[in-house]
Image (tube, rainbow, N blue to C red):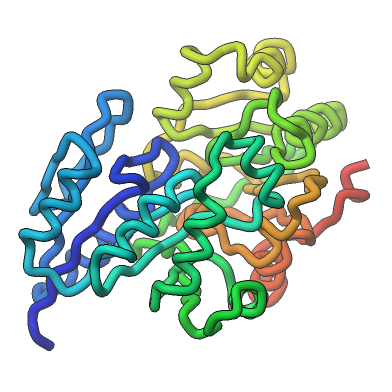
Length: 333
């Protein structure tokens, strides 16, 4: 196989605090001597990322400079990680350059009017439609069931949608010790949590709080383990997370804890990892056919999984391989 040059670009050119997908990918790509990797990103002093695994790094000041550097490089593919709120930039890459692979994070969040109100963004809907119709390779954590739905909705070829979940790194697999079950079952949620100030129909913050209160009253211990940069938000943006901070202070069976980047050993002391306990948002399609990044992290840890049946695709895998317990909202009562 001849040498290939792959350019990696984070959302809008900027790394996000809770996204580690490019860091997982580079760990895998480094195994191939015939693949040259170049990272182009905009520096952000508020986000600390360890870039030791990247060799060819172009640190720029703005989006225009990203485009200028790409034009100077002899590349084979551009791999762009994108998120909601960043699809205009992704669409611009597709319009400007050949051989662009767009790795989307989420879609299906809300209808256009609601989406634009919640996020103050009036470009994503038009941009995602352009991407879906004009990009030949759209990667996401959504399964083939979702690909069929999008192909029909946007009148495009379903084969351009590639199932590309966040994968496990072999070196990160953890030999989790067995924990004896006692009266004090320990559950853990690893990842970012939304503010409970946000609209309950579309964000799980209030549902998380209800679950915490219900289960801790039954003497079940729950910890939320947050990525380091996300954990710091709880000290700098206290007003957004007062409900969780209150539970952390006053509820002896609930804790907010600072995690470690892509280090699943921090979950060794827990019996089960979960995604959402109460799944009550009306935007069910957001996660119905998604295999989210948390799944890879839990697999690396070797921790049994608690999964609400509304997470259809993950629940299907959990059942097939006996990875944990599937439940529904009524089971929380």
